[in-house]
Image 1 (cartoon, rainbow, N blue to C red):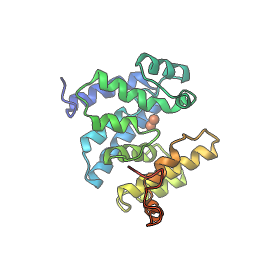
Image 2: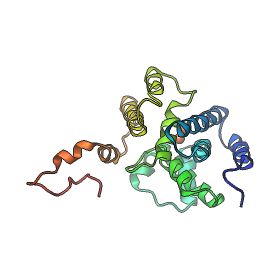
Image 3: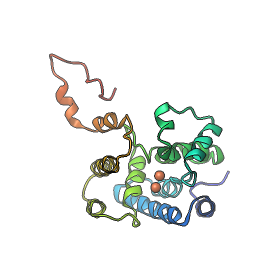
Length: 212
Ligand SMILES: [Fe+2]
Ligand SMILES: [Fe+2]
């Protein structure tokens, strides 16, 4: 098995990616890879894991809507009706599944960051957050909010930066009139310290959306 940390592994996947996605997406992926590595350096996370996950996060982005649904089916993935109706978000899930099978040497940390880069999740690890942030802030992304967020790198802690980027994406989804993933509120609330306010002597049980 090839060492996933080696330069050979990176270069081989990079060459394959170029054949899988268009030139724009390829450039974006290299930008995410570099940005993720730099965030990992700044925030003390595994730089190689971030660099590799960043490179591979859009591995399946070359499929169109029917193509990605067929891909999920081929991989034997069971999708909820909601996800079937949102094929644009599936590429992270199929990529993690397919890459895990094709390259079993890839650690769960890398595969989870790829899987979670579209929808996010509760309990995101540092690597998960780094790839999620890098996807939004790589050099090819333009806009006032993006520039503002970039300035926060190294100033905000990783969790705050992640929440800023998550909030930015949620607003974009609303502005573009795209459907909202039903777990978005649950994911957001899981990072809110205010949920502890809801705990009182009169009501000692955690609120329903709290972390277990
Ligand atoms: Fe993506
Ligand atoms: Fe991306």
